[in-house]
Image 1 (tube, rainbow, N blue to C red):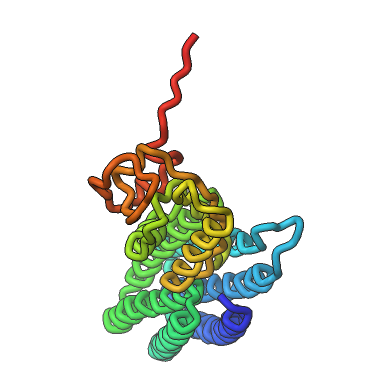
Image 2: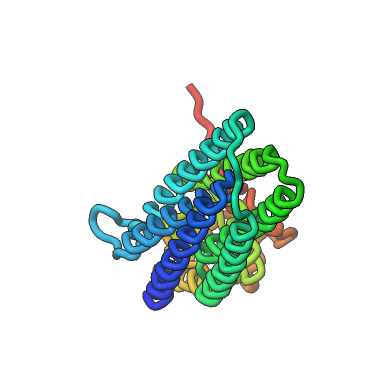
Length: 336
């Protein structure tokens, strides 16, 4: 991702925060007008959006800092930390909403001017959807997973708002106060589930858990563009820091290539990944020399040093390229 892309991402996120604040204030106004705990749930979800948006702006600005001696992989992990805080806030909001909904079941309060409240919530829902569309479109244009994910979250808020408006309309028609509490409890559970999913994903990232979906994509790219000097790739590791991936692997090449020729193969590998995969990836490629047992699956033509005929070439899989050692590595036997 270029500096321009990153700056656009930050600018877009600031705009989203500004509009989110306006939407939150509108929902709070609707709550005070109606005294509906259902509308309170929507308002609390919006304040979570505001707080998390502000945290995201701060974390993005930190993540944009260049690498330094203390942070050789950059500052991208701060985005995962901020997302963890967001997940926790969403969980707490969901718990409070459920508490308030149950409390209103036993101690119902009068709900006023519900028509105005429904209108405000509906308009806010439409604005959320448009903001989400803007975020997703910008994210796709500038290859930003964060903006795409944020846009989808905003649009998911709209879907929950649709359910809320339907529930409030039923409340307006029937005048049954318990419907308001049931709405709050249902959406409180949905919000808790959302917070749990965010925490699970960010915890995996903080623990450097491998994203095998990305690894599978990288594997397919490497196999599709395999060169005859690429005898095998193994020990591939992929970590994510913010919007950047860090990948290292062992590339096996013919043993008789000189240092310059082997280095050129690693640079070609790097260029292919950067062309085919649109997320930013930093590479470290370790060069290994081939050995006779690899001749059976080596497709290099006119190899003067071949000791065995080429009989079979296995399609590279995630299991093959992530294995710590080559499948054909000589067995080392130790004895007493």
